[in-house]
Image (cartoon, rainbow, N blue to C red):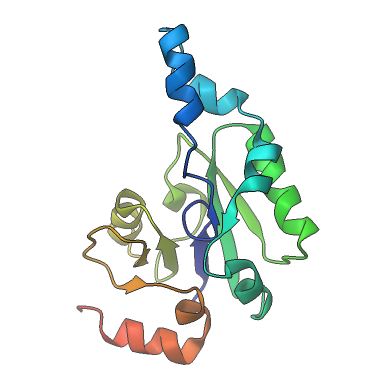
Length: 168
């Protein structure tokens, strides 16, 4: 069973404030759309200023990197490069799977009987529809088991308890 961990909102808080500047710029240029904004964002700076969530980087480094991949949607090659560089500079050895924003994560990674930890219920719904195991990380309502630390999924004993509580 492979474990896939979402980057944005699970490992790094890249989302807080992401669109603050967009809304300011949108007032000046009504034709600006979110995709263009995201494609032109200075991603290296943005990723480097993001807060690590609940010590996720150190937790990842404490477990076998062959068991867990980082699965992250991106809007540009610049964003992909910034994320890969960020993790490699911090000695994270896990595979980093880049998912173009036009695809579902299940189109890029094998979902069947594998785990996805994500903060987006839409991603989890699709993953489960493709016979995957969905685990929610976040503060919103979710029908999926909720975790607060990656250790709950990366530690196989803790994971067994979560899977044991899942509806059949």
